[in-house]
Image (cartoon, rainbow, N blue to C red; front, side, top):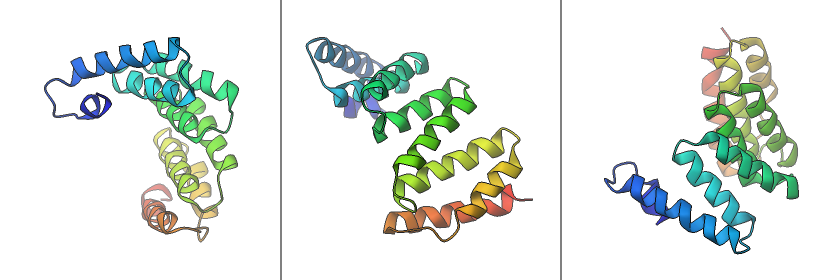
Length: 157
């Protein structure tokens, strides 16, 4: 059900999303775990309800402040809801709880640079870019490091 709800080209997507949201709401009401809550929040966000999604992610984070899935989701929900500073805060938490130079670390850096430059804070974005050079520690980090480096000419004008 969640796979069908995630497909953008499926004509039954909205119906599948609504059904999946109802199913996960019941699972949670019957004692589901934090993975179920994150899944429901992901579905809420995909359905366009960033406020509900962020609340669920924050509920998960209240129990486990280092949940990578909840931090990433909360950051995406904050962006969708127009809260750039909130999103930057969540991404900062991802940075602080991730291995420097790893995939999650670079994913967060890319998001931070994108948000800062999009918000007119190019100097801050450029400083983050430059401080992130040469930190890759994984294969996934290598490809994300290249992506981050490719952003530099457009950000650091």
